[in-house]
Image 1 (cartoon, rainbow, N blue to C red):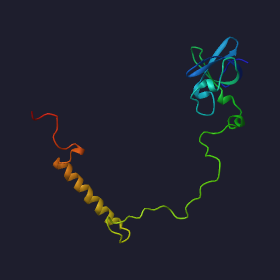
Image 2 (cartoon, rainbow, N blue to C red; image 1 turned 30 degrees about the horizontal axis):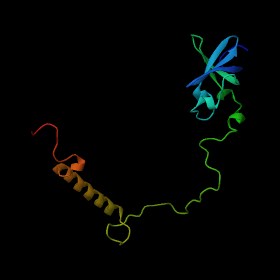
Image 3 (cartoon, one colour; image 1 turned 180 degrees about the horizontal axis):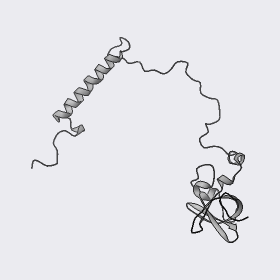
Image 4 (tube, helix red, strand yellow; image 1 turned 120 degrees about the horizontal axis):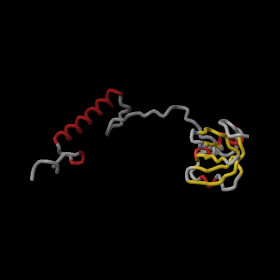
Length: 157
């Protein structure tokens, strides 16, 4: 069968490089399978999936004007064949964790007090006060952790 876009062909791996493999598809033509087109899972080492001389089924993805042929092994697989292996994002086998019957909602407490939960307004007021204290400390330049204090840039000698 001639190499045309969309064709399914049998080929032989003739070379492997870091980012892909060269596959001879007959008629003296060779195409390249990019590492992302080798398997339906993430591939870090192409040599774990392919070896020189291995017979593979490929699909022609594109043929450039210069005659470069782009191939895919994963798109040539049967859908059931691609899903037969373990999926990397699948949850571990075993019993599922139980869900809480009530949502996990944070209940604010007053600092140093156990008089019960704070209202939203009390929490906002406390947040604003803390923020204003920190900003005034920064403006005074008294806290060197936040860039205040003596600066080496410009200025005094």
